[in-house]
Image 1 (cartoon, helix red, strand yellow):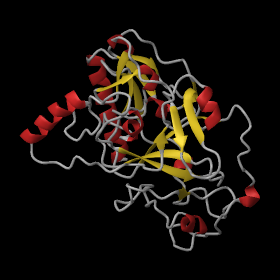
Image 2 (cartoon, rainbow, N blue to C red; image 1 turned 120 degrees about the vertical axis):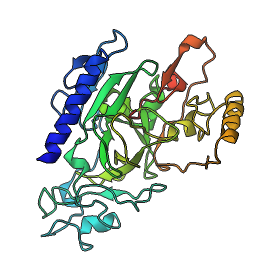
Image 3 (cartoon, one colour; image 1 turned 90 degrees about the vertical axis):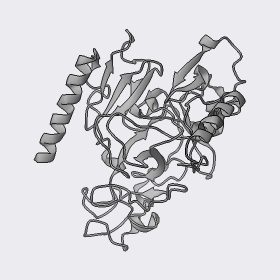
Image 4 (tube, rainbow, N blue to C red; image 1 turned 135 degrees about the horizontal axis):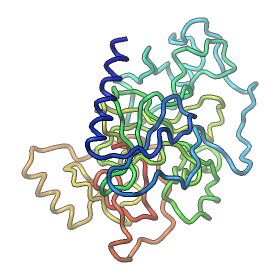
Amino acid sequence: VWTALNTNKKLTEARRGRERQGERLLCRDISRGYEAVPITCVNGVDSEPCPDNFKYVPDSCVTSPLNIDNDITRLQHCSCADDCSSSSCMCAQLSLRCWYDSDGRLPLDFCQFEPPVLFECNHACSCWRSCRNRVVQNGLRVRLQLFRTEKMGWGVRALQDVPQGAFVCEYVGEIIRDTEADKRESDSFLFTLDNKVGDTHCIDAKSFGNIGRFLNHLCEPNLLAVRVFTTHQDLRFPRIAFFSSRPIRAGEIDYGENYWRVKSKYFSCQCGSVKCRYAGPAEYSILIGCRLSLKSENAHLKSSSSHISLRRPKHQPLTGKTETWNICGHKILCSLPYQKRGVIS
């Protein structure tokens, strides 16, 4: 009860603070009730309305047959009578162990450099729906907000403190083949399912997506992308779940550096972080000077999701005027065709 009252107090104070700053409530829930918690949309910067150029969907969808194996008789399942926290749980064995604790969080020793694939319990299992090994399938639980930034377009922020290892949101969109992705004009919302099993597929959140499509990039990420299987076990089509890689204070969230692993050949990052590894020659020299003036820091950040990546750009780099560029993420300069909105600020 105390936790609920304290959370309500913080949300009320945050709302009053936004009202004082002149933020307008554009939509009380962009998910239209499809999420367990509402996702508000606010704007205190300009006259831009709530984004309506996509359809909000809580789960990834298809617009052409992909033959996803949904045969329930093919599902490996458990026969647990407990909460599925024991080593005898078949689903936990598929994941090496049951990684979720009693609060549904990943442990501190969870490997962030090469995250294991998680197999949650499914509808063929004998366990209860409330067992420990069901987190991502329970949907959004963290209170998030879509907001307008001064220089970064739309962004996402947490309205509550998020502990390390908590499930934040999923990257949802239209599942398409790699060949279909090549035909589409924009790479902005493509997320490659690099599963190394059969044909390559992507998640395109341009026309169909959830709050995950607005996540932006930072060179010092606080989100970890993990492949998860819930209702099926077709290894070609994992769900992409974002977990907090460190404690997140209310008001921030970010996807990570895989964006620049793909885009750095075409334009440079301008986040200004002393740990940035994707600045151009001119910016890099400035960053080096900053580093020398500060205490030595480890600039070689480990990948937060080496097996999951943004799709490689098929376009040539832009050479147009400066107004063809846009700010996204945390002070990150990138061209509109290559913009990846995938981080919480």
